[in-house]
Length: 243
Image 1 (cartoon, rainbow, N blue to C red):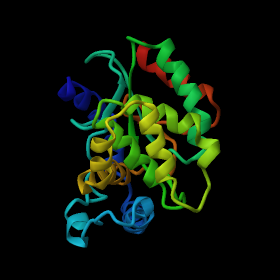
Image 2 (cartoon, rainbow, N blue to C red):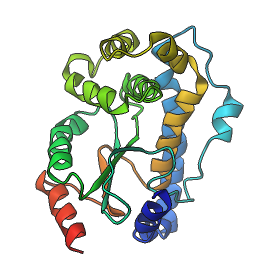
Image 3 (tube, helix red, strand yellow):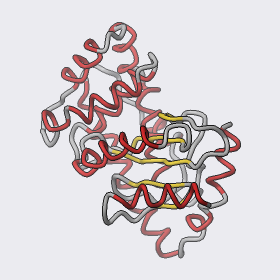
Image 4 (cartoon, rainbow, N blue to C red):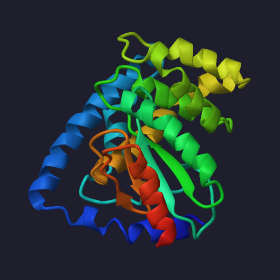
């Protein structure tokens, strides 16, 4: 199914590959700044955890001029409607208030179009949000135990309780994992594993390469939406289904 999804979205993201040179240069500079800032933002989760070395983070970078697929083997799929269904991909930040506002809309759409539309999400923690990286790492650690959706939902349901703070909320997020009944030894190991952070970076870098510069950024069947009102998402979905 992955190859089919990639083929469907790749056909409609060609415009990303043909951005004017000036725009690509601006994105490249912004990407370098954002990625460097991301590495600083996500590290407060545990001062005792070994950080990624500069070589490891550099080796994992995706060139901003090389457009990756919107979905790959590691992309978290919430609703899988099959290989012929339209695909909705959201790049999100768990601390982003706009993402929090879009969250219930996406949940309603997932329910309404269950079996008709595939919904997938990718991490894009913004450097200006102190705990967005911490939250993404926590969700990814939960995903390693099959609890991605539950932790994803918990983050948005509680965003008003921890968002916009300037101290690490890693302990709070660990508490969410306990409430979900996760194996805490496995969860803690996932948090400490540099590969978990690298997985978050992978989505972030893919977003930069695709021209993502804000959250939420939503693609419907390969087309990036310019959101002006909440009905825009459903309108795009209906067009994709009709089309």
